[in-house]
Length: 327
Image (cartoon, rainbow, N blue to C red; front, side, top):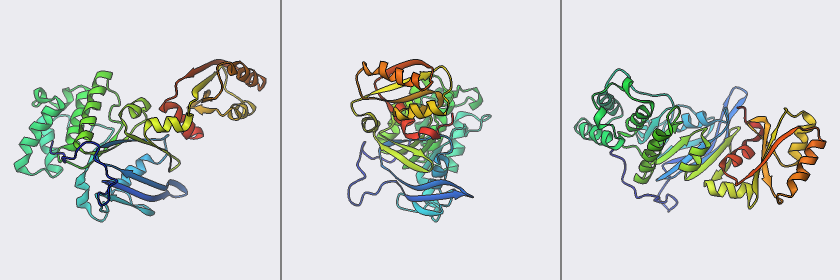
């Protein structure tokens, strides 16, 4: 693949060993709407960083700034120490895999890699070996002469990742890399991303798939209203949000009115994507559930179901994003 050979989990916190991506105090507005409000992000080598956030949180703006395609109002972006807008050659250290398939569907698998490899700057003398290596790595050797339009969705996404890393970048940016693929294809893509991380790439993954983020990411940032509201490993985020408590899920039979919403919020509950599902922490024992149900009923709420489960990233996300969720 031509990826830089850096040992897995090589620390970027040592003196003189700068992070491949550093965003400092990034601000950007579009008219009266702030998209980024003081974002700091440090992406390390040999890690997968999952970026979560509701629609409109600023994820796309942040990625465009990292790519050098968007100027910040203030703050800075550095890719391997250089400004990607002022020094366009540094963009060659970036690999980009968009959500939409970025391939020539009527060309063959091999032709796509040859063309996209040349466009990414792979030297002519290295191109054939790089293509051969990419086909072996993705398990697409037998499909070299097949048109991309004949591949399954999972195969096309694997090929998209190969095309985005053929030139051996230090940083890989991915947007929803497993949309529309079945579970087996999804796991194969996860294997490729873990392998790239273990080769030393710094990977920024933007996704709405909370399960994917939790299983893949070494660190996670939750971006809300242009600010990173929470950051850390999945385990540390869950610990910080819930401590030793369990996650409480309250399902309502009817949408709550203002009085009901206020009662739910007094109980420390947050709406989870829709007004009928609320989540929070259960600090007491199970015996406290009946008292909780009584208080909610007295507030005019129609409680359909109350569940308790071990907390995970989903609960952290809903508690952090809160009212900004619009799906």
